[in-house]
Length: 346
Image (cartoon, rainbow, N blue to C red; front, side, top):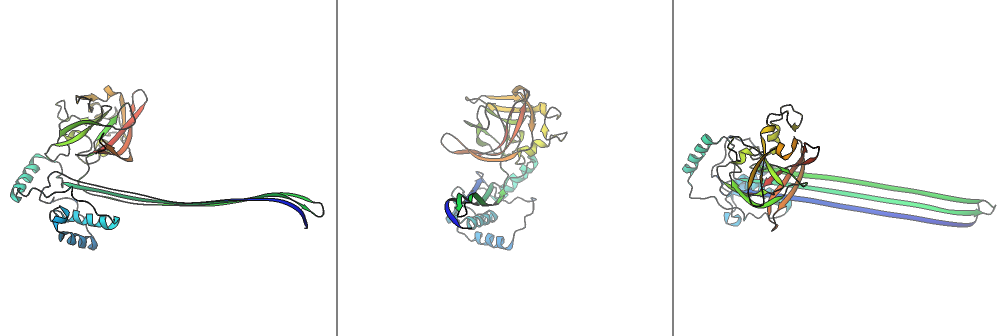
């Protein structure tokens, strides 16, 4: 072939992307007063030699530097040291204070004895921690090439041609780490009306939410939401966290699922508890109301849920709660609404 004349166009494009996304959260809390004795009879936790070494080192830390009584709970201090090593960041423990030293060990034993007789709820440790870390890395590369043109040869042949190819690759990796320590979170279930998600109001409520024998102050949900409740003693009011779903075991959906008699993953009229369930609300002025599910047009509650972690803040941007899990309920008219588990900050 002898080329006499040609007209050729070449085109190529190339794109390469590399994205890394890291999400890290550390939620720590401490009750107003920590019992000076350790809890006995709980689950046994076996610690590695490295962890025990960190625990031993934690005991040597000067409490003036941390404003925290490491002798009170060295395991918590060791966990904090491990998190600092993992994240490369210093964890501020100024939120913690020493327990009231005026309370003697003997008086603590007396109170513990009384508590075991009067309250069957699990004893709280007085602190808790929840840490989560996730890292996603996405790498992609795309190449495309095309050619077109025409060629005339010396023997009079006309050749028109088109040629193209493309190449691409994409790699995605994801890693995550999470653990919890200490007390279970206080996550009551909330039903939402006239909207898609839970709202927190400016009204505060005070009662024993975490079942430790002491009153807690927390933000009540907004007027378009209400706590799912069960008036166990029939006195026409919600007295403490034991009459909500979540504070007892730390998981509201699990507590509610215990009443699913036919095992269909729904709480509906086939379950005896359905007609006893209440929705506890407060209006903008703080006036309380208890509604039955029928009065709020609720026909069934779905027990499976998905993780929907999200901070809930007040008008001053202070965190008052954290959304944890979301599910749904069906209305008698065929509509649907959200049923959510919310961790209340006390």
